[in-house]
Image 1 (cartoon, rainbow, N blue to C red):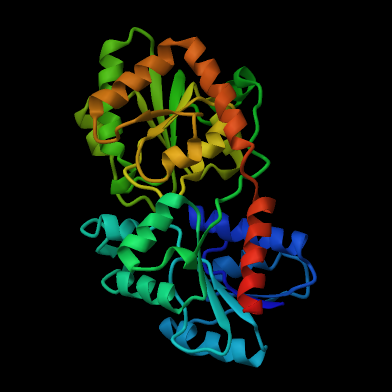
Image 2 (cartoon, rainbow, N blue to C red; image 1 turned 120 degrees about the vertical axis):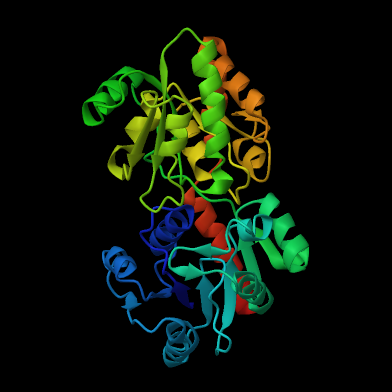
Length: 372
């Protein structure tokens, strides 16, 4: 098969970036006989993709929407592609000579439109229309969870038969390490971490529910005799600066913000006393799965895809209930047997996910579309 990919998200420190990087790399391993063409107008993505094996084609240009609607269709025709897979919810050309597959990771903008009207550098007014167009135009839709599938049916009016649920995989690097050694290394690298800590990994946007997490953590600090910190690992593109809120709650010495820790992330997961992810909405939710794969006890929300992803390997809470979040934190900090049980169940749940499995399922979608 001759397959093209919208690879603009390659290298991004986001769920979609992780999906793009792993799917493309594993396709080259699992099905190397296909011809793959990687499309991007982002120099950063180009630099990430050029390290993949040779005989793969990467194009770069800087013409905004013209790239998507003129350049891509022309190259699809020029190289006689059979299939084009858009990996980031939208971005399909209005016309082309091949069939389409689109991965719709989530519909967060449909759930919280007031929070996602405009993002830095990206006008979002037309976003719902572009996602709806991609869903209509595609031969098949891939989505990472049954929860997201239900959203696509509800918000976009797609039939169930058009949607394939293919869960994300899990990078094999995420694994249990010695916690004491990991904690010592983390403290040397990040001297602001001085105590045992609860960990959060992700961006700081509204749906991640960080304000309620901070309020719950303030309750924990007031009620527990043990000294503990909250470490928030985020990327530099965080939409909200919460440092002022931390100061308001009197948590200056107890909350630590850390940016871009890709090389240290596995050690940080292993060093944490527990991991918390009280998100209001996810299409999948990779960080809780990564934490479970490292043997770290997880607290997460009982909404959207998160119960589906974590199974019985996590302690589930109502993300809108601050008292319930605080109670879960107290339980997991005070109850060693609970931590051990969650560790064992989390490790077992994490073994169900792999990028090779996700890649093979994606190839089945390609074959079905190309043969129909």
